[in-house]
Image (cartoon, rainbow, N blue to C red; front, top):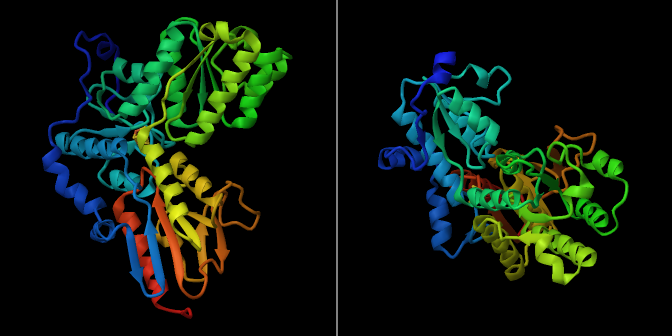
Length: 415
Ligand code: SF4
């Protein structure tokens, strides 16, 4: 790290910030293709998203894997390495929630500020920092700029759209209610936007159960201390539910389940109608469509896949900390037995599979806090398997999973 100094902080020229890549797209294209492309996936796409092999009929969702935001972020990271071969390059954390992609970036010498031995305070003018697709908090951005780091901003346009709306809420005196996960980087970055205006407030709501509590308070008021005890980690500083739930605007983490985001929006809308009446609604409630189209397309494709095909099981591929992957698995699991796996190595054999339980709860005998082992997962005889992958999963990983499934379909089971 290049230590920052007071002269760094005082310099007159702002640190460079690259927001549209580094003009090296063509130069890194071959490397990206070699790392993440899959000829098998091209073939499956060309064959109407189906693949037959032995006793296996595989149906691939028509929208899956890398979204435009992830594609761009990974591209910019490769460009950054090419542009600054001799400088220290850091990511504020995982660029996306995919272990294979993060591993490759580490192998290219890019370090992670989220690692225990990393220290953002020691960065200075010689250092380059890549901001991930889900963005960073305004305090982190301000610190890196203060320290004079060269920044490569890969924040996705869909996330910026959410921020724009949250900023308008804060400017106009509305509390941003964000449907999301408190500890997810994107939700933290989104919630931090309200601090750009004095008095800006935010509240993060995880699910309908939490939304119900908020709606109750909007309708009837209640014990503010009990409310704060429940939401202490999910609100901006000095939050006062009596004052700050009078005027609210809805937003969401872009990777949440669309149906839940819409349902929570409707719940809050109804609570506001009950409390203030329709004539006064505009003064108390706002909502914009901040659902990311890539997330929605992937969820819609799973729904169509499940409607069109009679599946024995569904496999969803993606990092165990990937919010959009978890939601794809939840969606599929409502209709058919679903396994959320990280990569092809999870397909241990035709008898055993390592996977993240869809509801996130692992039994005590599990392999780890997030992964368990299931047996007898692959039925005998003709087999119809549905497949999709989260927005941060490269085609190469999806292709490896299909190849492995094909191996199991060749042997060991009756027709
Ligand atoms: S999931 Fe949506 S918001 Fe997130 S990076 Fe992809 S396109 Fe952007």
